[in-house]
Length: 305
Image 1 (cartoon, rainbow, N blue to C red):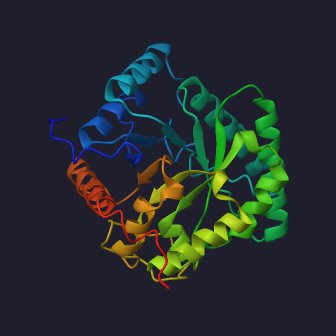
Image 2: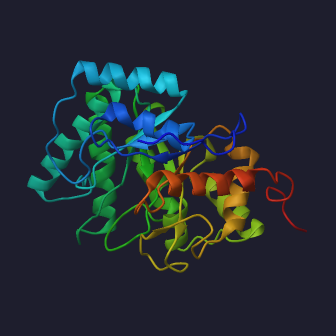
């Protein structure tokens, strides 16, 4: 990896980062994040599209921790594998998903990662009520099995594509209530998913209306991670297609609101923008855009009369 200067220095209360590859070992992710200029990173702890995972050698875990410390990256966020579907009522798929999610929790704990972002899953025509009940029961069981672990299961808002759950704030609130373990759970807001699900955040007033709604229904205190992604799709399209910051249909105003909102200070914000070609340059460009927006800390968090 060719060394490059990181983007602008981030303000103390703004924690920006990107999803990093674990090619060659999880211990390399912090070094990649350092090259980009991240204060926080997200990673898969195993292949995102396979059920099986190779064991994490103790030496690799030690190198991961040492590299995080050397790169001054914190907190770190793990993202669950895409195959996991805790909403499934198919016994075989559900059992396999439970085993895989347990392994994800254990790997995050071994790596001292505080947050594991999980998609609620898809009910696969069993109905939303049955799917939500299955997710809540499953996560409650998994978290009780891992009692004593520090990892939080962080439920990510979704675009609502197909039969996926978690595209409405009410569904997220129902899941948190059903799990009933607030010390082990949290929420991840994804801006692309939010917009695709029909929540308009394109202007300061619209943004604040959505954040106020989230606070009333779910509670900002439960918000642990934010994914900053522009959207290729239009408002309410229910299609999950990420775009570079300011290059999609959401636009820069929403991201200016997010990085200047005092209610969100200290919450790690992760970009999952496209990485075709030179990922370092692409990530640096997106983070620099966000940092430039953060410099204008005056109007975005104020409502217009």
